[in-house]
Image (cartoon, rainbow, N blue to C red):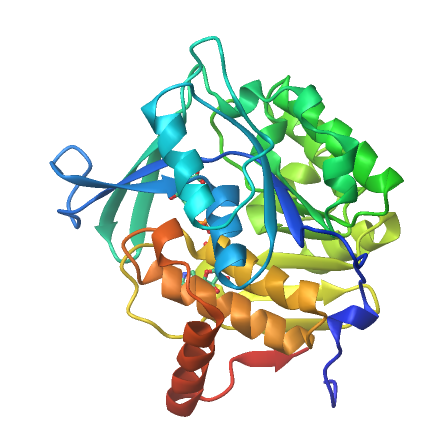
Amino acid sequence: MHNKSILTKDIITFPTNRKFDMTLLGRVAIDFNPVDYFQTLAESTTFKKYVGGSPANTAVGLSRLGKNVGFISAVSKDRFGEYVTKYFENEGIDTSHIMTCQHGEKLGLTFTEILSKDESSILMYRNQIADLALEPSVVDEEYIQNSKSLLISGTALAQSPSRDAVLKAVSLAKKNHTPIIFDIDYRSYNWTNTDEIAVYYSLVAREADIIMGSREEFDLTEKLLGLDSNDKTSADYWFKQNAKIIVIKHGKEGSTAYLSNGEDYSIKPFPIDALKSFGGGDGYAAGFLNGVLNGWDIIECLEMGSAEAAILVASHGCSDFMPHESEVRTFIKDEKAKYGDMVARV
Ligand SMILES: Nc1ncnc2c1ncn2[C@@H]1O[C@H](COP(=O)(O)OP(=O)(O)OP(=O)(O)O)[C@@H](O)[C@H]1O
Ligand SMILES: O=C(O)C[C@@H](O)[C@H](O)C(=O)CO
């Protein structure tokens, strides 16, 4: 048990005097969430459209928390491509490095099923997909030089040319001392086999300063390494590579942040009346990473992440419901008054 917590700026630092607090590389897509939920996708007839894609949701979350956000991606040359780009512009996210596909590639569409507050699933349409057509030429060194941090979404590694764009961005980030955040973000679509997943996930994970994922996602990343499926083993292994912070999420059980100084801190989810079970990870990423970029105390980072996650699982969509900082702080204050502290210092 630790007597006091630790400032994340004593664990990881970010370059100063750069235009973007974070540039994210990955998909921006569309979610269609049922308005007539609590029945199957086959039965639902009415869907509400939202900008989606895990990294896109996280980008919106960070921007609403006051961060200056860049984004590297590819979108379709049609009304859906226009829609998501315009949405980003309205949210203050830089769209200068979002390429428009020229060969009929389509934006990703995700239909979600909200069966009950504990049971959701997603059905993704990702054939001839725009985001994986991202050309490495879109990744330019100046953009990475202008970013204090780079977030890679693991799904962007599923296919070339997007995979090549990721590896180029990682090389340029290393050259320019831009810390890398690897959000493993596993989606089964577009991957052909688990060896391929492990090869490319582990390639980026070993260069990353922060790695975030669920137990299942770490297992996929570590498949070729022969590690036992254990959070502490994972953290120790990645700390021996380049990592400073490892976050492992366990859904409703909560999550733990392992720090390279040997400490770890776990947080239970804030009790909330959930509506759906997806979207928590994106809210968590925005809240937690905003705190780490600010160099805050690790407990504050975990509370902000967990609170944003709770707000998201209680909401009908993801991007549109990302909160501003004052809303998150009010939420935490009210929850603590009702339920006490959620963080356990291990
Ligand atoms: N029912 C719930 N109530 C409150 N918080 C929750 C609930 N479910 C999940 N969360 C919060 O969301 C966080 C992330 O959830 P999860 O582990 O499912 O991540 P994920 O798989 O990355 O999510 P996503 O569906 O967004 O991809 C959890 O650590 C927890 O803080
Ligand atoms: O990540 C996606 O591509 C889909 C998301 O927008 C989705 O709604 C979800 O699962 C949130 O994590």
